[in-house]
Length: 101
Image 1 (cartoon, rainbow, N blue to C red):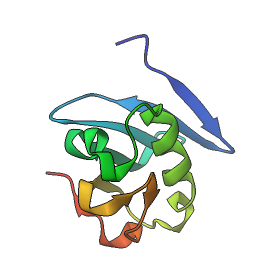
Image 2: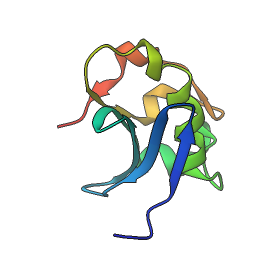
Image 3: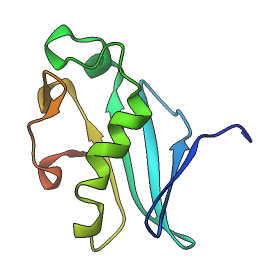
Image 4: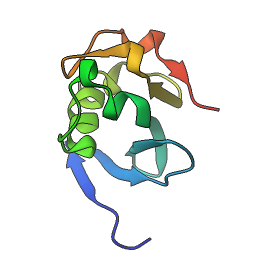
């Protein structure tokens, strides 16, 4: 896909990640090395308690991932589920998020 959204956060490049299941995700890369893939499940996006409905999910993931991407020492692929979000806020520490398959 050539129409992927791309963001730059300092020296980190952020892009939409291919949709391979019931989730939306973005990837964070430094140079050629992917550091983080951060996704949010479809269930979390539509659950009223999660408060994500109507939000720009890529922007929300960018904000959440940017808050901890520099703490990561090895490549991680993490999924945010409906249990991790309440009223639009991530209530699970990034190190406790579920690993993507």
